[in-house]
Length: 271
Ligand code: TMP
Image 1 (cartoon, protein in one colour):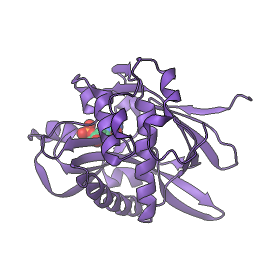
Image 2 (cartoon, rainbow, N blue to C red):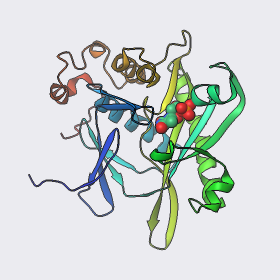
Image 3 (cartoon, rainbow, N blue to C red):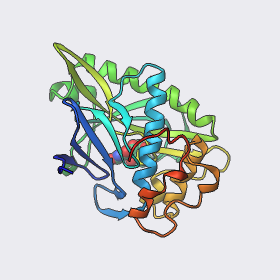
């Protein structure tokens, strides 16, 4: 098979040239990093779980009319997506105080916010992704006021949809991060949701026990990272009940790619 051209490698994903013009293949790695790369490890099976979880969420969002880059899942680790010009912003939506917000304002984690808050961070690793205002965004030309309005509007709709989706499976959506991109169709440009939505970029707490089911388990050395991601997938109904403890039984990365039977709704997707 011809080697595919790699377009970009990030911390958790690789982008390859897609089979048709205007498409890319998004490959989910098992690598986990935190603290701007200060901490890194491999969590065998994470990429497979995030691929499925993100697919499930993107399809739900498409159902409510959110435009996304997601076209279809190709196999256990890859999905076909539309090419976009990534806007260099991380759009964070917060329903409760946690993480950097708890630190910044010295507030207890878990405190409910009176209304969801949208924040923007400039995507720049050497600068440590600083928090920026809408004025910074416009002044530095990262996006125009209309783009910002579109992103905030979509972020709030996505939050409503995901809060309901997660509440239905006993999970509180504490906060999450989105990335958007520009997609040109002829003369027309529209902003669409890009990247992924998974426990790597959400805070997900069990509604009753407040147990963390997300990447904070890795960031804070709490252990059982893969098991937490599996639990999210299981509750979403995309990991079959009897497989909950079976992903990566041998600790062997490659063996995971042969365990399609662990997932339900495989819908004939080719590997
Ligand atoms: P924070 O509390 O560290 O600012 O994170 C807010 C949310 O954004 C949390 O769900 C984790 C997510 N996030 C990312 O996905 N990538 C990042 O680089 C950072 C800093 C946060």
